[in-house]
Length: 166
Image (cartoon, rainbow, N blue to C red; front, side):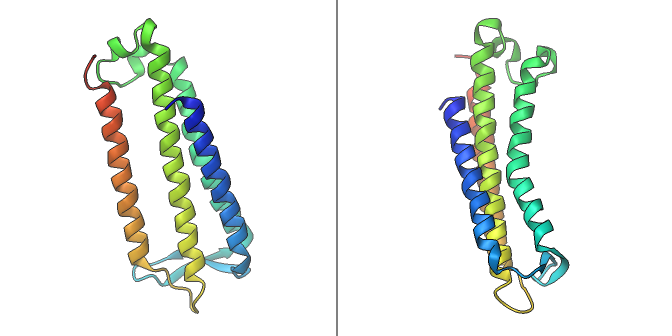
């Protein structure tokens, strides 16, 4: 998959996640639980507007930061890029293709992050359906397990790509 299609997928997920956050937040109280202790009990509160700004900022900002960092790779000397068989993969005839793969791969990680953050927001909204608000930890743990599994797969695909020279 090329960089532009992975970027389009990331932007679609980000846009969908932002729309989900905005549309699902109307039921949240003006001052809402934003942090939950072990056991799921709310132990931190903030204004809904601040929470929305934070969630949208994270959903848009983290993947954008990843994309910016990937773009900066092009400016770094080869000696500062940590990649198996670096001299082979970053040789002038393969440099652009290698950096494009890394950028596209990074975009997929941004997509994972945006989706995970939207899911966490959904759990926060769900927590507010009861009084006092209580986060369902089992769902959060399940989401973290899925995220970690996806991260392991993401790393394995990256390593597999560069671990050996063709």
